[in-house]
Length: 102
Length: 130
Image 1 (cartoon, each protein chain N blue to C red):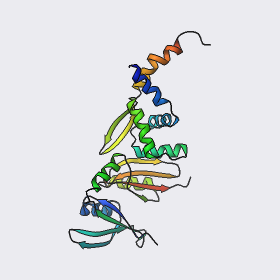
Image 2 (image 1 turned 45 degrees about the vertical axis):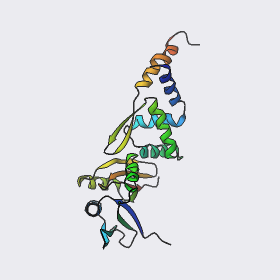
Image 3 (image 1 turned 90 degrees about the horizontal axis):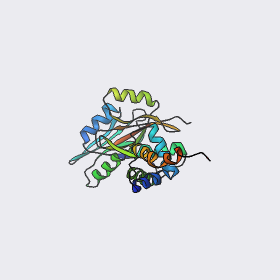
Image 4 (image 1 turned 120 degrees about the vertical axis):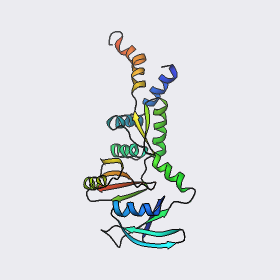
């Protein structure tokens, strides 16, 4: 994982809506855009536009955190935690595991 | 002003008639020949005087890209209300209907989404009023 990929992962995580989407998709893999919007509305009680959710999904997909599959002609989104694990291994753990706790 | 008819764009009217009557259980209200196509409407047997659903041919060139884009994003074009979603889901599944969304609790409603075989996703909802 290079620096750009690492940036994309942390940028993808640096937004509460995208973190909620990750939470939802971890609970329920294989969701369509419509379902992700419905879950976001049920969970947060506020409606986000489909366009906004689409942009959030783009960010997650560019970071490699989403795997796309098809059910018939419907596009489904599933979480792929591989880049998150890599980001943790090459950067987060370096700080968490080394040295004394302050 | 009242809503007396609403439409769903179907790839094939005969196929749609089979699906909407024999699977979903609606009944024909009007079936009037109109040249190449028909003015074909169905109603719910629970409300035969209620709003009609027009099974409208999707022959306009914009219809297919529009329908395909909705299906890609999993967006149901039309929504029907049921009293008992789990029972209805089981009944339709046994008739071979494909569900793209199994029944799920979405706050104040239970919902599921099925494929009408005519190019549309259809939502079923049960109002739970939570």
